[in-house]
Amino acid sequence: MNSFSGSRTRAAGAVLHGAALVAMGLCWAVPAFADDAIRIVSPYQTTTLDPMRSAAAGNIETYGQLYSRLLRRNSETGALEPGLAEKWEISPNGKTYTFHLRDANFSDGSPITASDVAFSLERIRSDKKSAYPAPLGAVESVTASDPKTVLVTLKSAFAPFLGNAEIWNMGIVSKADVEKRGEEAAFASVPVTSGPYEVKQWKPNERLILEPNSHYWRKGYPKSDATVELIEVASPETRIAMLKAGEIDAVRAVPWAQIDELKTADAIDMRLEPSTTIYMTLLNHKREPFSNLKARQAAGMAIDNKAMAKAITRGYAEPANTTLPGSVDFHDKDYPGIPYDPAKAKELLTESGMVGHEVKILAAADAPSQQTALLIQAQWQAIGLKPVIVNVDSGAWWDATGKGDYDAAANWWYNETPDPDLAVRWAVCGSCGSNSYNTFYANPKVDELVEQGTKEAEPVKRAEIYKEIQKVTTEEVAQIPLYYAPNAVAYSKRLQGLKLTPSLQWTLEETSIGQ
Image (cartoon, rainbow, N blue to C red; front, side):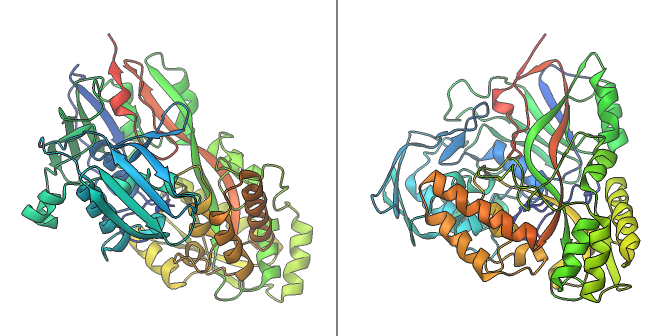
């Protein structure tokens, strides 16, 4: 999914997803390091403290610090481990999951019960304000059979369920507090939390200050008693300057052009961390020219994504070969991808009857988006299309793509879990509620394979299903895959244990401050 707030059901993610379409933040002077504070700077805003209400990148990072889930993902191995549920059983038919809760408390000291879990998951699944109910789409009901036991009944066997129960919006909130204060007030400033941190102070559009939750169920965590500041700064130059000046500890979304320099700085640990992010070009299948298969294939063959990845990311990203992220399970790394063949592209465009057709390319104002749009424009112009770049802000971008009022738009999205189910539902499934990420691509065969993939428990057989999905959707150019990008994050070397996981979660509870 991609990552903008409120405009879609999937983040990446759904996000939501365009690194290019960043929200505005404030710039100010930050005092020099204090040993009792860990500061992270990001272009992405915290806009709500309710884990149900938004799928925006800044909120995804925040939710992981405030709310625990039934399961947690080991930050080193990526394996699913017990979270608030210390154990669970799955019925022989794969339709009933029984979760047994550990003794744990909310930040106000009250016990976390099965009623809280059922209340939290049902809000995500069925509330009209839920930003991303898709991960619980296979769920029939969630009930508390006793204070420590949660029963989740599925409509049918669903192989990705446990992984989905761990993602960012599955955090458990206090039913009693939400009912007492009301939904808006409960999350307005200082919510009752179940995760490693609670809110000390929130200054919207500026920063969110967190402090360790003394009632957190993982004894001995967070490892540091430092407060955490999530600071919003829109300007990449300002973010990097703050890091160099020793005013902050970590910078999210380091510009590609800054990476080489930061690698040489003695006090900075510049990392390219694993991600499930894919950059691609959306094509509108609802109208000409891209309702025509040959025109889409021509557009795909006209783009040299190897050269594009090198030019835009300085070679730090890997050219994409399928419509799915390169690091998800069952990615077909051996698939050859769409060949770069301008001569064949010209031939296909002529056969399509779309030579000279105007193509409206939506582009955000930031440098990478503009660069991508210009490269696409030049390569499509060379084969006989008439591409025109239309500059828009994030709200207009989502409005236009959602309505199908565009022809092409470069963007990115990421997958919340290693399992590919959410990825295919977001990007290439015509009947899954996302309109194949606003491309309106629809192939009943693909939709059928998506459902087969969730019901098949055998990994080898699942792999074959997802390979077929990748083959069909790439050949039909559901989207044009551009490149797989790592998370570029720079850290102060005074910290140990901090990283950004592929699911956009900071390992702050594992972090300690060195001397």
